[in-house]
Length: 304
Image 1 (cartoon, rainbow, N blue to C red):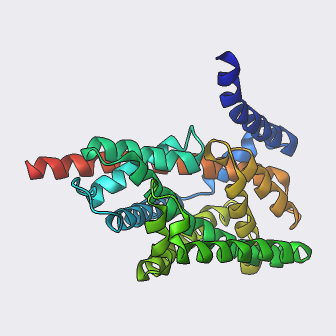
Image 2 (spheres, rainbow, N blue to C red; image 1 turned 45 degrees about the vertical axis):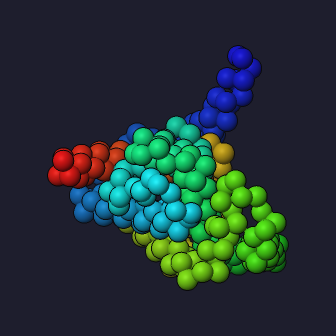
């Protein structure tokens, strides 16, 4: 049992070690870090928080949209406000768990408490809607790699095209997929008009994430040309796909340090930026979770 617990904690400890090593190896001082924080005005922080709220809201809309298009159930689909609450709860779990696991888990727990929604259905719908986020990230990663590392571009593009071919093949042969997880129904949505809506929402979320990053990066001293920023941001987003730690801890941090070093920016600047970005992201998620609780409580009080 102790070995099992150790294996669960090990990824987090390894990631935390990477972050600590980044901070100390960068030479970041308290005065530098304080200067980066004070460079952000109330408007910058407000914009970051509002964009974070918007991203969570769009994610909730996507999940509810998929839930509505699965097999009819005697239990109604969670309302918009409840879907927002469960999505925020999943995002909050992502502060201590792997994000790819946390969001489906948070939604499953919430939807189960909401009205005995089948766990398999809620998890399947959540995993499916996140696939569109991953597709957008992969597409932009091809652009990012082409801009910053053109030699690797054929490999990345090949993997992306291979993924599209597999998805289209399975969507046209749903009978090859098990029914337990509603996979056959979900794959048919890829060719349905709803698929375009899901892609559009994922694209909006990607743009909002880029804007949110730029809102604090520029005043903190990370001034890159638009194409350089696009390439850097796209590669960092790609690194999130392989992150197996809470909040992608360690992996994303060193990816930012790596891409910013290509433009000869100080490592201390990268270290300070990722710390501020993480802090604001955590505060935004917790604030959104608190707001969602209030919205749902008000909705239920009004209904009674």
